[in-house]
Length: 227
Length: 227
DNA sequence: CGAATAGTGTCTCTTAGACACTATGTC
DNA sequence: GACATAGTGTCTAAGAGACACTATTCG
Image (cartoon, rainbow over all chains, first blue to last red):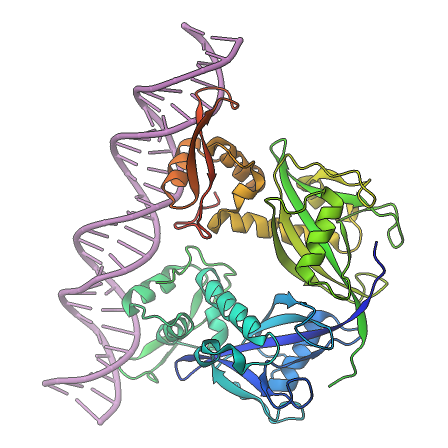
């Protein structure tokens, strides 16, 4: 076995939300070299006695103020090409899905944090430091795929939501139009996806809509299909 | 930003094959502490100037003799709990799917390499060192899921194969019985999954079967469904 | 009233799964 | 001949997508 060599280990975050009917991602402006002053995904080094997920959660808290909230956080992939960072950093990327209400907190590290539409960043790779364009791209594709077979779209919604709001999440993430009537039938027929709360709202205008809460299902049977 | 601390970075491999109609995984007996003498997944440290995928390919070559062959190799997940290895190792796990013909090569590192049925290892977690039971479990689940929507089952087959042989792969990985007639219809109707070579074989007994090669499709439309 | 959104019903087409049947080899 | 596997056809039930229709609010 070859002699071990110590590399640096960090986590990066792809924090997604749906805002103004568009999929948006949290970016920060880098305060140190390399890529000082450029836009990047939030992230930081893993502490010696820290689990990877804990490190990602800590970064998320530092950048958004989100701590033990109803946030979905999952490992995305690990990026370790020798040239991706001159300091030889291997980065474990995490994907976070957060509700719209979440504002980047103007704290110590996060003073420069802001939401940016994903479509703009994906168009031109050079807008993000390191290989963060690739990481963002992988994260968005993961999110799009997971909306098909998991109830994760609810992670973008408030605690209580209407089926119309849930549909707008799908439309924003998939960048596609969905028939409201078929969507409604599909969601209410998929067992465990959503649960009626009994309350109603008119915040969408038009006829009052029932409010729902996320159901117990982990997987959707049958899945929602991308148009 | 907290001061960076150097951790050790390694790759571990979940190498799967279908042998004797069962899903099997490559294990080695550890020659050094910790867990010396116990069964583990093959793996090793990443070299300073090496990409992660290159490291995984190198390990695969050292353990199986498979180098630039028709092998599927993809990143699985990264495991970094502080207690998973007393040396504080973060490990990027890779999943490899190889054809049956592959024999573990009796080389330097791999003298102890052998195939073991996955079912036996999943039953009792203590049979594998470190958190390798968890890694194996994640790898098997990934393989099972990917057979649904990708043509990856062909990675377990020889260059040319019959539809019956392909079905046996699905049956072994999913541990399920599949109707041979519906399977045949499904595979031949899914565009780009397999391509006729023109040749026939009788190696399965019975009526001669057409031989196929893997097709160009990356994704299966519609997907194969797990029973 | 009209405009907007919520929610239901109906029709057609595709596909999964069950399974009868035919084809072609070996023993 | 019996037996095995290959390959096709046919039926039924379920779901996707298109879209007509009704319900309930606001202005």
